[in-house]
Image 1 (tube, rainbow, N blue to C red):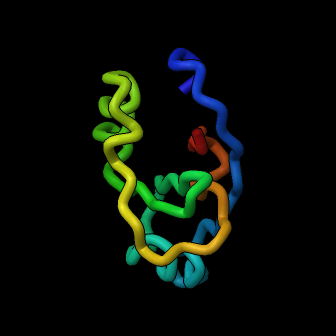
Image 2: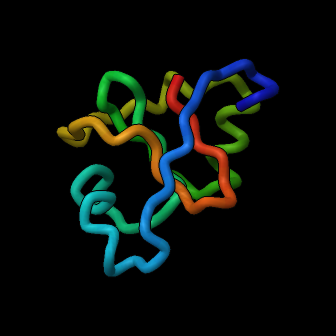
Length: 84
């Protein structure tokens, strides 16, 4: 995302899946990584697929609404999510 000059904010979430109720509510899953865009839409795929999407410059094509309120981007503390 740095290479694509996409602005983002890292928001650390719980490490244990059973404590990821907010993530479940936002994305429908308890898995990382997840990106929440400024407009509240959510993008969740396997990290290698997300990386390929970002490298291809197609991140905006992945916006899917799940009725999300404001929670920036959730991933584990060793990862880099994005919020364009």
